[in-house]
Image (cartoon, rainbow, N blue to C red; front, side, top):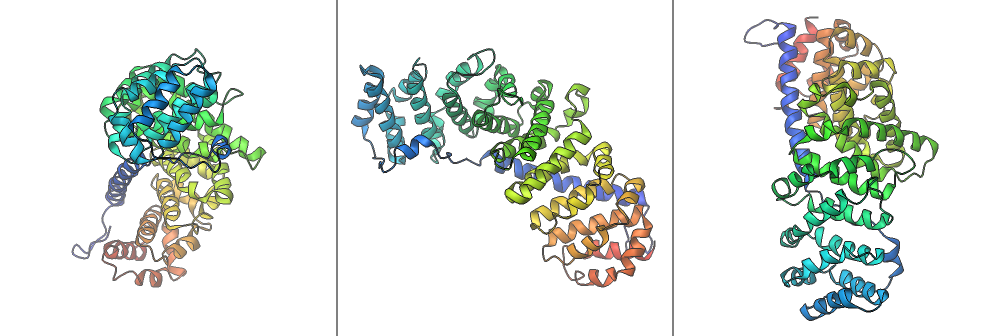
Length: 458
């Protein structure tokens, strides 16, 4: 990189290493912030047909006496319908923060609710799980913490339910999966819950639930994919998940989702795509991946092809998921020449460039992926240039977002260093004039000056 005080160009190797270190530090900070944000992102309950059937019913705030009455009826009622109605009334009441507070301070209430989960009657199990639903996603930390005693039962139930982990009552399993996913987000989870989860057979069962095939139930898979996501975000022991085949299972599921969206537009798989993409992205950041046996490695071209099918689907149907897919592509290409080779050999650079106008976040991620490719050396830069990349980069330099411009400058710096023809083309396209508009930007001045000098000395 050029320094006016020294009056000379530094060796290419030094420049590239400095760029690489700067990018890795920035990406590490971004990943940490992203993981922390994901860890506390409570999900809203999805609409349920049974809720619609209750239409018009107004949930009432329940007092101590009413809560005790409904719990007693649920335990001791003489008819199954009577017991079920009692839990439905309790669940509606638990939608109110006031009822939640009363419930958790009422002695024996949580123990009674957990006991009802052991019922051999599916509808009672379901309503008890839904009550736990309401409590576990409460915005009041004290309420969520009061659910912690239920965790050991959930682990026992979910870990030992059956050899195939396929419940005859999938709605109950889905409800319990949702409740567990909420409990995995409480601040005590990394110390009090996740070690127990990882010490049980539950991770293997979760991965079995996520295996593509006729037994895959979308609703159940969505809830337990979120459970897996929060476990991975905690970073308690991700090497264990990798050793259980986490990468290969999630990779196969990614291929299956890509095939599904090609067959039909209305798959509902976008609900599953978000946690699966996050799980893969975060697992791939584990340094331990490098020492894991080949059985857990992802198939380069198949995964890249599947990911681009999903990116095109997101572009048309769910643009908000594009960053999730691009984070995965970034993590795939960051330290892997083979994934970068796949991008080039499958002619996927142009489809990637077509995503630049979507948003600033998408633009930054696209440019970061391209930096990953360019960083691999002259042979890769030769494949990137010539092509549509030059006009696209001149376009992104005109963006008002400083981060987009900064990432564009880093990509151009790598291209100029490894592919001198790129610098000549840039000069011919009035690139220096484009750079001049950023000379007064404090955050960009040094990089703009360095790029100007690199271009002029090629």
